[in-house]
Image (tube, rainbow, N blue to C red; front, side):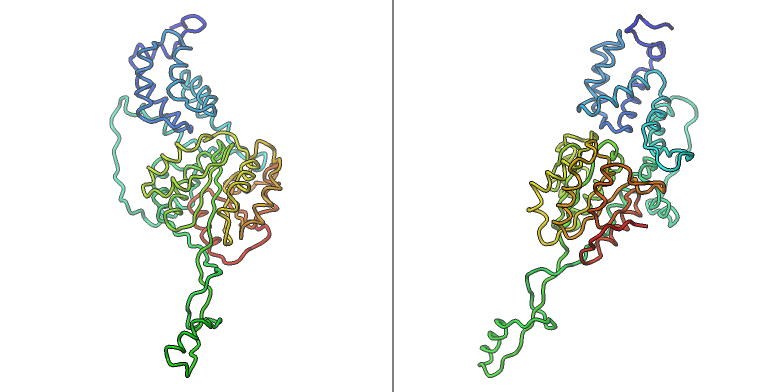
Length: 410
């Protein structure tokens, strides 16, 4: 069927409408947007269907802006929605190829670039089509306790390459991660029979209780406790998939010990420590989403670190705090002022650890200006792309003392 004028619907959309497939396609489109990074829930899909019923579909522009008004809530989501709309309502397979082209190309020139988001995106594109007809597929029930080989595969699997079921299993595994922090001496003392310091006050008090004939020596030693931990996590568009998994990690960390302070940043810095203290992870992450206004947008690492140094460093970096920065180092400001702010942050903490998901590539080189500005001011440079990398972080946090000087994980 031909198009209805310049602004009319395409023939593909009209064919689907005549075949009564508009409703399942709107539902499928909502799932595709959610898989691409736009938070779309069942309520938004229902609102979209009702809005289309009211606005009608006589014009393609009306249909576009009707869905845009329901699904898009932030300026950073507009470009992604526009590309998804024009691709999906002509050929849904185009969207998968477009998402692959947007991924960073690293490694040797002749290497085939990886497509980490293709599995989940393909699953999202196939939702709603599998049940349209044909024989039902056999359903397999999995035991909650995975085998040893299954756990090993899951631990080494990249977060970007996980299917929906694997993401759910990885979130459960993150809740069980143990991340011990090395205990460091504080300025306060506690009674200790084997302590090296004699507590004169306690010794004289003990002698008075015995009549003063003898002075029993009472000893003490410094109290030890884990240092404060501060996490700065990048939630920009390039870190979208990883930041969602790392939020589960930070929630488990916040509820496992005290004195954990968590910040997220894209174009601005947001303190989410209070939200992550809720025991229910779903409630906590919903509160984080409501509090953060620059989700999946641009990245201003230098400005965000400067804001932290100015407003928060004196509050949370006391008593030899350890700082973990989670970012890919891709700064849209070209690293302007980032080196100076990272140097100040490095001097204010006991240890500065940088976790970068791009380090998982063998061909990774610090060519970005942001990466080159940050590297001289970190003590450890490690990858964070799977469960194994999070477990290895525990070994780094358990090391006592301040390790000054850049070291890269092998």
